[in-house]
Image (cartoon, rainbow, N blue to C red; front, side, top):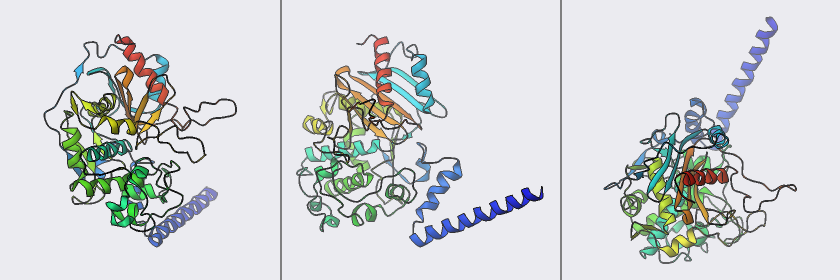
Amino acid sequence: MKRLKKSLKWIGIVMLALIIIGNLIIIVSGRYYIYKGIANTYMKGHIRPTIYDKDVFTNRIVENGASQAWIDSPDLGSFIFSEKQKTRVELLKPASFLVAWGDTIIYEQYWGEHDVNRLGNSFSMAKSIVSLLVGVAHDEGLIKSLDEPVANYLPEFNDEKKDITIRQILNMSSGLSWSESYVSPMCDVAELYYDTDDRDLALNRRTIEEESGKTFRYKSGDTQVLMYILKAAIGRSVSEYASEKLWIPMGAESEALWSLAGDEESNEKAFCCFYATSRDFLRLGKLINHNGNWNGKQLVSEAYISEFSSLAPLKKPDGKPNNLYGFQYWIYNGLPYKVSYFRGMSGQYIISIPEKDLVIVRTGSGVEANWVNTPEIQDDAMEGHRTEVPAYISIGLTIMAQAGGS
C-alpha cells in the first residue's frame, strides 16, 4: 500500500509538471486557441471536432426559400444492405446514410442522436461549396478570370505571392506554406478551426514554399483564401451568396448554418463547418449529376462544373499524376463511369454518379485509411482515396438495383 501511494504521488507530480509545461508552451507561443480546442474536444470525451460543433461557434444563417421536397420511394424502408455491407457501415460510426435516385430517395437511415431534421457539420465538404460559389461569381463576371492573380482581389498577395492565380488556389497548387494535421493542436488547420484571426493566418502569414501551379497539396488555408477572394468579388458574405445562388433555388427544406471565425461580424470558416440536414446535402450531389442545372435552371455553368469535376493537370507530392482532385472537389476514376464527391473529415460524403443519376450521402464520425499501393497490391485509381469510398458506392448501386435500376 505504501508503495502504491508513492507511485500515485509520482504520477500526480509528473501529470502536474506536464500540465504546467503544456500551459507554458501555449502562453509562450501565443496559441491560446488551444484552450478552446481542449475544452471542446478532450474535455467532452472527443479526440477531435465532431459534426455537432455548431454551438461552439457563432453561426450565420444560410436562408432557404420555398422548399422542394424529395419524392420518397413507396418502398422506402424495404431496401436493405447485405450483412457484410451493414457491418462495414456500422463499424465506422455512421450518423446517416441516404441514397437518392433521380428525384426519389430510395434509402434513408439514421443512427444515434441524428435524425432527418438534425444539422450536421460538412467539415471539408464546405470546400466544394465555396468552389461552386466561385464558379457562380465567375459565370456572373464578378470574377473576371480564373487565371488572374489573387492579388487583384486581396492586397495581402501584393508581395512574393503576387503571381499566384485563382486557379492555383482552386486546385490547391498554390505552393504556399501550410500544415494540415488533424492530430497536432499546433498545426495551422487546428488554429484556423479554433482561432478568430483567420485572415492573418490564411493571408498574411503564408509564404511560398514551392513553385505554384505544379503540385497538388491539400491545404485548408487555400480554401479560406478563396472565401476572401469571393467576398471581395461579390461584396457581401459568402453565406448570403450561398443562400441566393444555391440554397434557395435548390429548394432546400431547412436553413443551413455556416460557422464563423469570431463574432457576428466575422467571416465564414469556409474550409469547413457548413451545417445542413442529410436530405439537403443530397441536393448538392444532384446538382453535380445534372452539370450545375437544377430542374431546368442553370445555377452553375456547365463549363465550370466540367473543370470542377475533372482532375487538375498536376503532380502529387510523390511525383505521380494527380488522380484525386479538381477544383476543391474529389474525383474517383476506378469505375467504368464517372464518380466524384464532396469529402469531409471523419467520413462526410456526398457522392455523385451522373451516369446512374445516383447520389449517396454518408455522415458520421469514422473513416478508414487512405489507400496506399504496396508491392503486392497496386491500384493507382484508388491511391489517396479513403478505402471505404468504393464500399459506399457499391452499397448505393445495390440499393438502386433493388429499386429497379441497373
